[in-house]
Length: 463
Image (tube, rainbow, N blue to C red; front, side):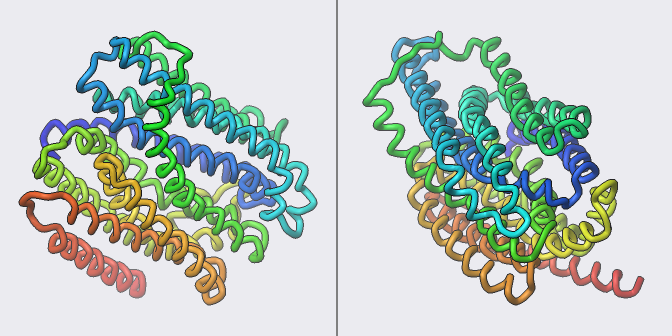
């Protein structure tokens, strides 16, 4: 990264580190109160569709709006009449789309949710449907969050938006601690919805204070919406496919009994944590810079991409090795308390070991996918995402029969690594102009990680 970029990454990483530590505290509280109980499994099944829609719309609209607003702010003042009309047309269109999707979840939940319930969970189907409908509110909140973050990032404001997760986690933890005895898993729903509301208020206060947007208007420009939704449609399909892998996980996890769905969730939290701190900070700072550099040979974007990938892998590879080899003690220290018992520990650690390789893949994917979206290569990402989902389904089907439930997380690692390689090769080939090689330093980092893995395994064997 360049000096200013490095300072921005450090600042964002610091704030995200605090928020993710609070996120871990949130999961520790959940583990203490619910463990891998059947009630927590019910909640995770109920939130599947709302969480899928939340992730799809939040990331798709964010990926769409950051390049769009960055270029718009470069050529027009935010207070211009034409600028205001274009901005609010896009905003109103996305909010309407989120309302329609939330309504669809409410209407079709009784038809869809039975696919993910069997055995004991089937008797609780009305509860699952009720919570799925209640949690559909987060779909609309996702759109508002994406818009507010995109506006601030396009204005080169990075650190303040990262603090939104601190607000979310503080509310969530408080809600669970204060209301779990009275509401049971309803406390989780309260924390989820209330936390997102508080986070959006926090982001909106900065947008209002900075006066970076014109006065709100209820307008819908057909030409603007037609142009923007051509790209938005591709991004939504990409994110829908990319985030549906956890539906595959939970479908294949059900036959292995109670607690496996919860254990998969705890493992995913640990695996996603490093990328959600440093990887997200790197990718967020780089995203508007990729969008702004439109020169023919893109020299700045080339150097930025290389440094972002290598900087991420220098951290991701050793972290993946440590988490993979020390899975059981790590899970014990973080989660083992209250309802999280020895059986929960065994299941979660068994899933986490093969899952750890995903950490390195996520660092590469975070930066690469933003580079593709910033340059207008969304259809290429869509093609690779289809390959990802097909690979994920086939490998999960095979590995779960070979290794039981740990095979589910191994399938995730294999598919995500393949996705990362495809994206990285594509970005490097499409960025034109002279640039230093990337393959050789990546091979050296991976080789060093392999040596570290063997050394740790020997130490564990001896001691």
